[in-house]
Length: 143
Image (tube, rainbow, N blue to C red; front, side):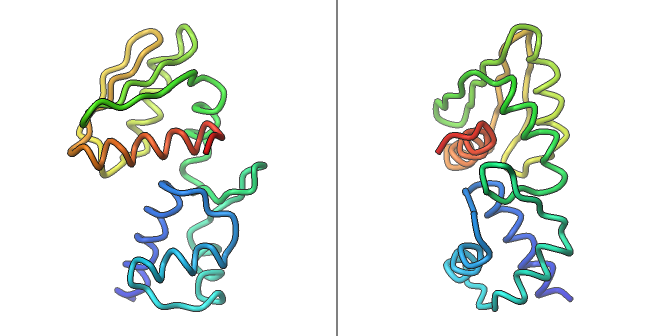
């Protein structure tokens, strides 16, 4: 049970940070993180976790679908400076997108401040900020 939970936590992080298109991709990325498992195991994990595929063909966590929709429709740009991530949104969308980001409870995020069209995200480290940037970029549908 513990091994499955740890593997699914790893899957959660991988899917949030990277553009995973196939179960084979996920098996390969899990191996890079020290998890040696079969495609059948990954298939069961995908079903257990409720992962979904976006129209772009990448996996997303079910709990991130709302966040993904908001980001793809309302975020206009995202940049990083050290451990800070600045997100620009359509006018009036900052608070809503900020609330959705807070609701995702990303491990890398210490907190955020949202205005009318801008969100400032404070990450724990520079590497965590890069991970948040990658996630938002993925949700926007960009590489």
